[in-house]
Length: 433
Length: 124
Image (cartoon, rainbow over all chains, first blue to last red):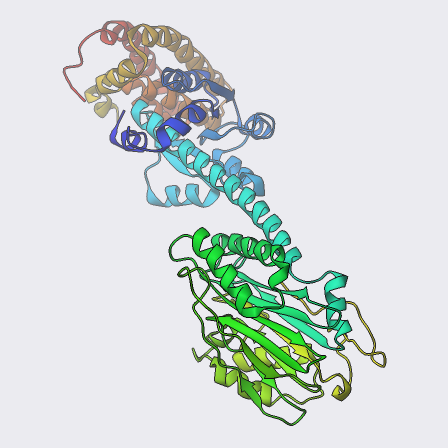
């Protein structure tokens, strides 16, 4: 075996064990109008364990066999009585399913122009004539290996894509879309809007609502470090923990401490999550919350009141066991608005590379007219940060807007859940994943 | 061109050695036993095309013949086939060259069996 084939099938190559058998079972079509030339090529290949070989005596029969025999590689003579090898190449390449079928052209032609035309017509490679057996075996082997690798890669990508689609759907179902979750907000006479986009197929952000009593509810936003599959799997883990410990839903600091203990024990080094949990209690006109390294929520008070960054601190979940979290308490009366966001929003680099930051978001919230619906507020914040539908996001991004300014809203956003008898109720949250 | 063919080796021993290495001596002999039949068919095809006064068909047949002759190491036959394919200007020109082709075929078929088992004197 010459150097080319030897390197491709060296003992250390991971290809060797997995692909050698497949390569030798590959279907090879030899096209030549001289039967003895066909036989010579076939005998050389059979001696090297290539067993699945068919012949075509002309261009037309070659095209028929490409469809019926479905070869993995074609050895093609250039001059044939009915159809030239060049034309056979063109017709094969015209079929989108055959664009990567290896076509090795046998030719004694050496001038550069003719070789260029051959490759333009779709030839993958050429075999010089008279046939050199080692060259024949090496080129056939290399092209079959390449084809097998491409096929395996395509299969792998297709399977992975299907699995990611399923995972994305499952993750979407974690988000609060169920009617009873919307009812929680309805009972509190509020509106809610949300925006959630992953930077890749699946992400590491998660938000949700949990019931506490007839009027109050808890709302959380988590952001696992990194993004992609690992972060996404951790969101499932977190979701299960939150919903398992209902007794802690009224106790932000206690909930975070529990989650930290569980995640610190379960997560691998380097994995952690920022987490914000807010209990919204409209009967007391207050919110109580605790944060594990999350961006500060923005709270507005009154229609013309200030927008405030509710600065809080705390170690992210899963970093170290035994962490304690401070409980914070703020007024949240009628005409208030609460905005939760992941740092995918505040740290999004706009077209000039600028990031709006927490303070920039606060100003953007302050600039929002009180008549805007939660969905419209979210749109304004995305605009202010430079986040557009066509932008690729470098990080998963989630925004949740809880609005008590029902009476001030000039009109309801049809895409937000409106909770007011006088307003049109459309049971569809503005949720995007 | 005729002068150059006198200098052309009858057989390409390197090519034959490559085939022997790839196929083994026994299988190579079996393939070569069919070579004489292929040569006969090629000659017959060229003769028929000549009788039909079809120069293009002669050239096409010569091309096929060149391929099979070259692949089996029949160097002089391949060289004559190249002449027919690329240099022939007329049917008469080819008719004039046919005796040389017949002689080369006879010499080649006579020499091949002895060459198959003989050392090449050239290690690849």
